[in-house]
Image (cartoon, rainbow, N blue to C red):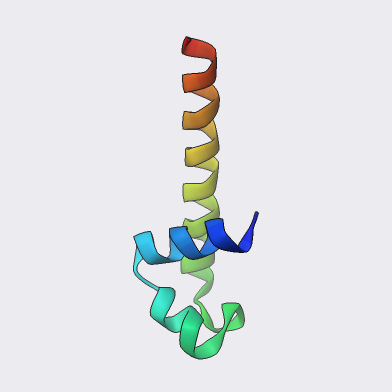
Length: 53
């Protein structure tokens, strides 16, 4: 996962300020899990739209 995508998702989920202050190691495990869950969801949506055309 690219840094830009991770930052986009962190902003969307509301913990980007923690990333800026403490780095990726400072986020909660729940936030990391939610970030992965959101990335998977985005990938699934992208694949679904690709095959609907």
